[in-house]
Amino acid sequence: MIEILSFLGLIFGIFISKISKEELKDWERYFDVAYSFLLIIIAVLIFDFSYMILLGILIGFFLYFILKNIYFYFGLLLSVNGFVLPLVVLIFIIGLVYSRKFIDLTRERIILEVMKSFVIFIIPFVLVFFGDFVLSYNVILNGICIGAFLHAIKEYIKRH
Image (cartoon, rainbow, N blue to C red; front, side):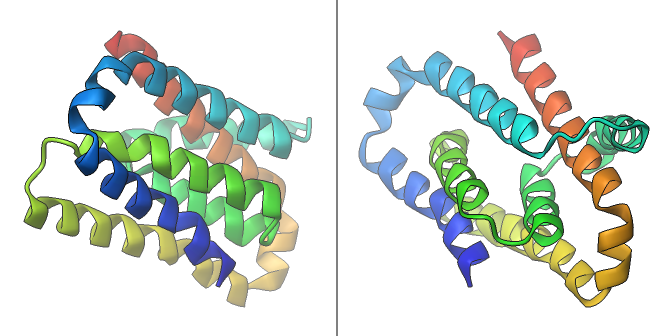
């Protein structure tokens, strides 16, 4: 249930961004910096130096080319690490910041994007049923999340 709370940051953020559309445009650059900074904080929280995590980072960096929805990696992160409150709170805050990308979309398009993000967010929770797999490969799976976060940050930097 707590994973749903972390996803609600996206929905609350969309609601807030629709109310204050004009004010958010002046702060767009700061939202990008905040988004990148929060992803770095999460990456530092889950980083555990080993060769396996470096392999995971490499896989995650290239996997992000195929699956660009960051909520997949948030779901993976929560399913691998359990529902650690600091991660849940950070994902909620990132949702508030990330939602500003939906400002100019129609209501139907926003609903479609949120539903798609939610389904993609929930998919990694299937790993919970494979407890031994998660325990054996949690370092690689965390590395995949870190690699995807690094790729997402690289894209934000390249855009500005």
